[in-house]
Length: 245
Image 1 (cartoon, one colour):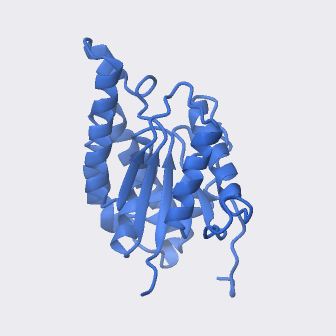
Image 2: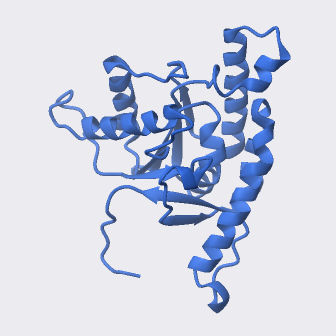
Image 3: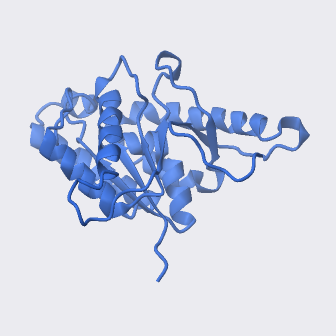
């Protein structure tokens, strides 16, 4: 039996995977990948202002609401598996055991590629911290001396998805992914995130803008693909190819 292609998205908070990689998730699920998502926190303190402003909600109630939203979004995108580590946010912190827990997931999934946040985010250090941890756990998952006898990780590419204010983050996209054929799924997932309704229009506009960038970089007026919606990513590790295109 041939192993299925798989991918792993590590999200600092419960909504991040939707805004920034929802199209990639839905598209690769459609292509036969099993895409798993790990939410390190629910974003209950720092990313749930609407729920707190309503008044009367406890921390656990906010967590429950954000989990429900994320699960609904995951279903809309066709996510294979979603896990919630519930490590808290603002600040997000992982101790050694939590890192090893993430390593266990990475090894279990054996992703062909991974996704997480930009390496720098002065507005939300949970995001950049998450990617620091992801890179560390990727390294550990490759180590033959970590839990000898387990299947070690190969060398999956790590794609950094787009931060909210990319011009402030030192994030430079070098990959554009056409998500036009699955845009309806991403938009449905976006609308599941009721606690952050103020971001719906922003990420719709961003997908349209990245669609423009895809068209320009795929040939422009000389035959570029007519992508309406796209997502941008920054690849961290070198690409190993047999031919330059």
